Length: 258
Image (cartoon, rainbow, N blue to C red; front, side, top):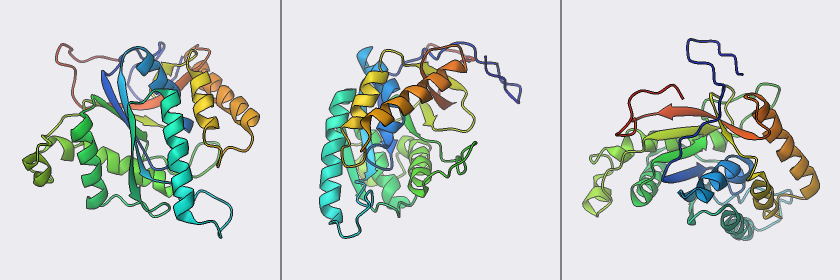
């Protein structure tokens, strides 16, 4: 059981809504695999179609300042494609924005609106942009925060507004309403997806990032521990936690207390 500090219902059961189509928007290669990969794999196994968007190619993700950043970007894109195939996404897009300098500005939002209007997801999963300092220690990367708020702003109102970036609509990319946002790595989660059957895929996807993961056994222990800790919140063996924002109810639904 999860105790809440406001008047919202206490969550005691795993989340069971599943989008037919969903998009994961992240800052860097490997963010989605550290993030909601097990949820994505669960939904894909159940019949959903998923697409991954990486705002940058991770060209600052190394320890040697002499390494060619363009070569590192190429390596990391290929690692993410391999990981994406393990999870089961239909594809991966790279927006080639500057790693370490991602900014929630019009050019990035237009690129994200283009992706959303092309793929037309029911739900978008992205970084919780309000997480700056993690409870228990740690700071959320500036690119994570920028990617999260840019994704939120692209979802609402831009993607659904035909007057936002009108050249897109004029060229066949009609306005599209994303109905739900799932914000991952939140300080205050309110939604848990059971992932016991797909944690293995999350671990395998992470291990595809060989330029970043140098201790596969240690990563596996860490991921399984995190999943167990999040699952324990509502009595599950393994879960991933989110902050859920319902923008539009499904056509056949009234208000729910999921």
